[in-house]
Amino acid sequence: MITEPRMPDPDGFYAALLAAHEGRSEAQSADLNARLVLLLANQCADQDVLLACIQAAAEEDLTTTNTP
Amino acid sequence: METFAFAPAYELPSWPFTPPPELNGTTVVRHPIVIVGAGPSGLTLACDLAQRGVHAVLLDEDDTVGVRGASSRGICYAQKSLEIFERLGIYERIAAKGITWSFGRTFSGEQEVYNFNLQANSVSKQPPFINLQQFYVEWFLVERILELGMTDVRWKSRLTRVEQLADGVRLDIETPAGSYTIEADRLIDATGANSPIRTQLGIEAHASRSTDRWCISDVRFRKPLPTERWTWVDAPFNEGRGVWQHLMADGVWRIDYQMPEDCDTAYISQPEVAGARLRQQLGPDVEFEFVWIGPYGYRDHLLDSFRHGHVFFIGDAAHVVSPFGARGGNSGIQDAANLGWKLALVAQGKAGDALLDSYDAERQPAAKQNLQVTSRSARFLAPRSPAEHTLRRAVVTLAARHPFARALVNTGRMSVANEYPAAPQLPEGGRSVQNLPLRWADGRETTLMQLLAEGTHCVGLWFAPTREQASAALEAAASLPLRLLAVGGNSGLPTLQADEQLASHLGIGDTGGFVLVRPDAYRAAVLAKPTPETIAAALRIALAHDNSNP
Image (tube, rainbow over all chains, first blue to last red; front, top):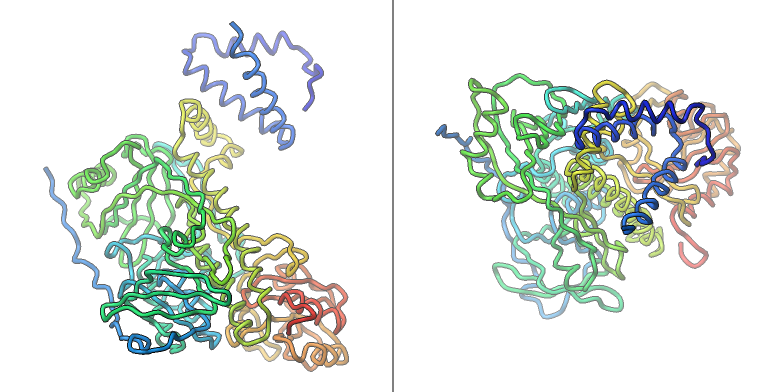
């Protein structure tokens, strides 16, 4: 899993992501995110990297949920 | 309210209870092999042994086939099972009665999202699948067993107590004419998911029960549909839940409807309720009649070891998986075929007890793999949280447009002949060899299963050996159960025609190469440059011989 910055235009990517979510309900946003995850996973297509990304994302959740 | 008719009930065969001699005996008789349970795995084992000329006692508490009447139960018989049935002499009956298929389609809502054709990877004489009601398979097996005449089949005989002895097992058996006790050198438990033997011996099965609920409808109707496996992840005619649809023998369709977890199982199985569901699926004009309706939930369990002393667990007694992918009955049949030749060679004094340990070493990992595969299908089909529903919705939405997502749609990964891990008797691991069509040098047709059907031996396929090599190898393996055949060349051995498909399927083909195929059609060894000594050594390894036994 690569965690060093690689995206050529981070702000542009983030803006596009927000734009895609604009006007969607919470459920519709969740659907969009799920589709996006699957599409991106297929771009990566490296099982070890995918599992490392799943783990990294899941760990983040555990360290932040109890913060007031 | 519309009322729905039932077809006349199937008339299942029954066989007479014959009081066994032990009922009036004064001494406890010992039998070499006792099998308990005449379901698919117990019957396959008895038939496999009989085909090999090995006697066994088969006990069953019932006197007929089928479970809960003529429910269709296990309906999809996979290629490996069909190849086993070919070797046992009942394949033709199964093919004539059943429905051959290889094509499956998966739908979400009204849309097809995925399809597969299993024929693409097949080189076997047998098709990828035949659908047939389970009671027919049991019926054909019983008739074949009776025809072979090697098995002491004891109907209406219920095992009430089992005890491990130092050198065998003691069994108490209850019959309509009274109770008696026998002993067995080896006991095979094929009593199914609720095995009383397992319970009495205190063996942990690690069971877990699913909350997923289904209703089976076996139904006959006049609507021309292709003989394909159709599955809906979320059928509009079943309130967005799963539906399975298969054609079986006698024009009967098996349709499985996924039900709400908290459903009343008696209510959902009432003819009016099941009929209303079907009416919604088929539209107003289709005539149909029910053959059988019943609810089911499923569970899974897996024994840590399939052998406990003198007791061997096969089929559902050893493992139960969720039903998706037809990995239950088919793996029980494969358990039986794995154990059959090993028991036969031990009974004939051609292998030692160590060979029987390999049954557990091969079939327990196979069951573990089946459990993992089917659990993943079950989880796809019954999401447990809003997040799981969201992810599945994403998968099926994308699958309609993007091929990559179709690989994630999981309505069951169909049963395969599991590969076996590397072990002392299988140094490179083992994989199944399909029932290849073959030709003798003179043009006569044969198949791998025909080569394996008589007696109990490994088949050695040697690509164009010399005369000197062939006669030296015959001498080196003279005391071993080996049928040595040449593929091409002029060696003086019985010779098959060289054939590209054979070579590529076996994974070898260069002149001089050698492949050892076990009696269960698993590839045990590949030798690129064999000698008479390495051939004999490969055979001894496959049979788990050591210096102290044959």
